[in-house]
Length: 141
Image (tube, rainbow, N blue to C red; front, side, top):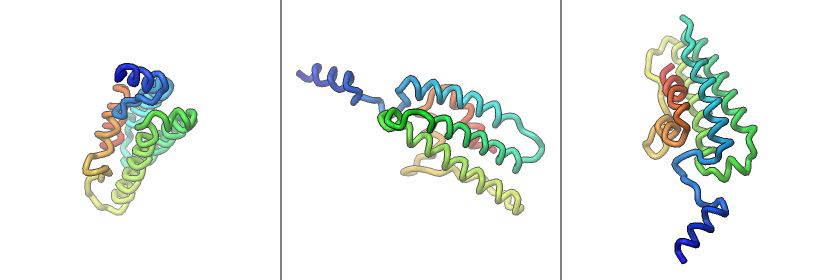
């Protein structure tokens, strides 16, 4: 009986690993977007503030690409919407950091947390391996 319940949950799409992006379309889109983003974030100039802001444009492109996926599919893959939101929060932190640099304040970037857990670690935990470099580069402007 228990085995048939598990089979039903899996077959009905109700059994998802909440610790990873499971849907193939989501994973492949995230992988491709992260690979592109990593290249853009690691291509730095001498103008750190400009690099942060151009990196944020690239993060916005990743977010836009992910949001083009079917909303029901994103909602059904539990961490997907949080993962996209985490990118938006990280971009906001990067912008605040860029503003501090412009004002001559030399303080470290503040990485947002959820229940004391840095969003960058949460992002890495659920994302395809190809996203680790992009997340690290985004968190180290």
